[in-house]
Length: 274
Image (cartoon, rainbow, N blue to C red; front, side, top):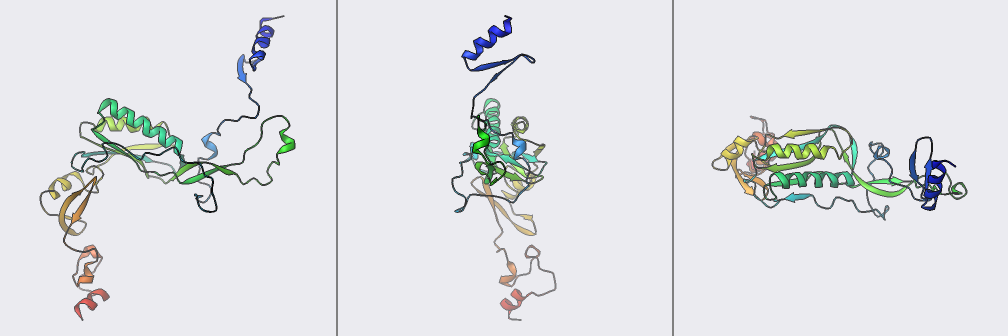
């Protein structure tokens, strides 16, 4: 008897099999099947399918923490901001989002320090993935029905992503901007498809460009047709202009309300008694 026979008998006692042509060890566990590859659920083929009173028993998503780092720090502390954009319309699992968060968080802690950044996960996995489980054990053909009644049971959660949608963002100091780019580059390996690391021109998580933000914190500036000051409001900001959203209700014409100069609209006539 050859060496392969002896090896085969030895492995058989441990529940393993030896396949001679390739020389690979394959462990057979009857009835146990691994997770399906994500190529089965990657594409947005159907309508969104979320948890409701009709669809119960949905497993919880793996992503539980959406803000990491010094998340309570004010808007003035972190001027730099880097985003990770999706370049494909696809579905991203909650497992990969959690893996990306852990990867980016670890890199930023090691290189910048735990008090010098704020990571925000911009996606929330609400879409349910279904699976029609098939038996793999012996005699399965007698028990299962093939494609009859193939509507699957809830299997996991994912987030549906559009092209150029932000997956996650990091705000940090100007010194840590390069490390934030590297952290998001590492996070890209956790996702399917193609992503883009984009360095924002805005100040932190605010909608204002850096120069306008610094000027608006000390004096009045013009932004989107209105004049006012930028006031800190926790992580974000407020634009205090002293005017309401719909100025025509007060009988005031302003281009921020979408009014056309020289034309009176109904709200202005009502308030001015014209």
